[in-house]
Length: 86
Image 1 (cartoon, rainbow, N blue to C red):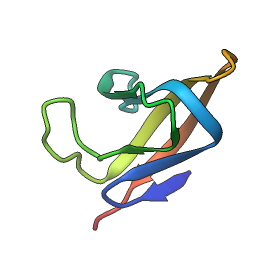
Image 2 (cartoon, rainbow, N blue to C red):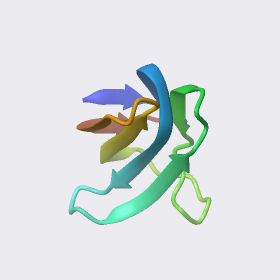
Image 3 (spheres, rainbow, N blue to C red):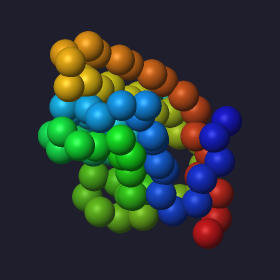
Image 4 (tube, rainbow, N blue to C red):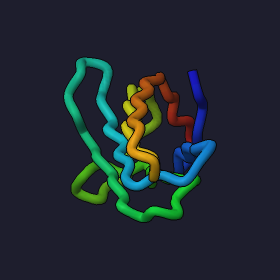
């Protein structure tokens, strides 16, 4: 697992045209989504909040990152993240 406190950072090896982080609880419900269309992005941050802006409690979350690079190639990656108390 990838422990984090507060914010989760995803770094890309090259700039992306667009990217999205979907966050799921352990039963598979999507509970948050963050997107960007900043063509200079190499660091993408999820703020650790539900879609309604409230802070998520400590726990295990699944996340999926999907991105399109400036050359048009697409990448998708899934991982487990553990939010720890700040």
